[in-house]
Figure (cartoon, rainbow, N blue to C red):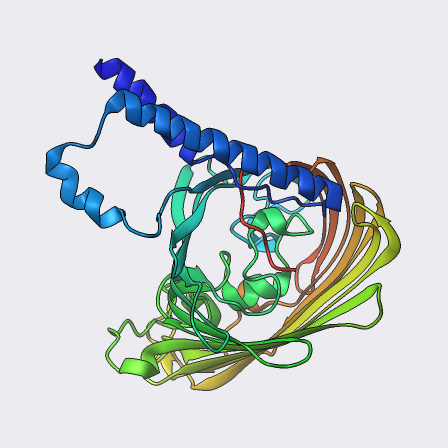
Length: 448
């Protein structure tokens, strides 16, 4: 009887996690969307039937759980279904660079000649109750030394019923700065992260614990204003109070506790708008900021500004979203106020207070040649004004990256990319990377 109940419970867990829909990398046609919707309805009907059958076999809950059962029963069923998804990326390739990590600085970029698994993501999402949705992303990866790592990348709740077109997000999440920072690696158009993002936000992007409020403005076209208040500490807050910030300012960090209240927090505002130029062309414009303390000194601050543009043309007679042409570009500027500090490697040397300025940009063009085949080209640069401390992290670098991607289905992707890197003080390098990606289960849709 115990084995039968265990098997039935496992079956119940599987049926509860049946996917509601897939996160198609290639836009689906209306007929395909209808088919997915019908399949989803059938799957949920089968799930409900199985639950009822299990209730007959296992009987009512024990008396000692009746209070908990009563708490979950009511006019609205909650937590009934949870979407479960798994996305895995495998990279392979070769580079002339002896220090690949110096040119591929992103945490999910290729790191070695040979093979890498930079990202394997377990995603969970579902309705909590009539007022909230819950999301989480748990990431596993294998580093350049072959060691496995795991991190809670995101875990947040999202309101669904606030008045006045307001929405609240709370927990740990990527800051909505620009277009690419909030995106997960499997939704990137290219195999590696843009240089300017890793310079401004570090290897893992700008994310932290906090709360974000958004307001959908009552304009005739889409306009959204957002502001996030987040912790400024931790390894994912590069440019602020990250423990690795000595790589930026060169001094001993001021490792003080958070004690100044609001002044010790990170503020990330953004506004973006979207409108149709014609029946076949759409434009999305956005500006962002990030303001908070850094740990070069007790009162030191950092300011980062960004502007982004996305344009897309899709043929009026497009089939499955093809052919199309898109342009995405982002530019960022950083003002890092470094306090007077002791040099990290030479404690007898005092570095002066100074303003360290950095800037960079990228632009990428994608051409959807025909269904499931996309060609791309990305150009980018980053530049840092000289300061009293020379660091590889602030060195000038440019990169050109042609890319070709094939989607065998909506659930898999094969991409090949060539990088030409030019580091002004070191020289040029050539890299060739191949990436294979697959998705199983469900995955929440990403923003346009």
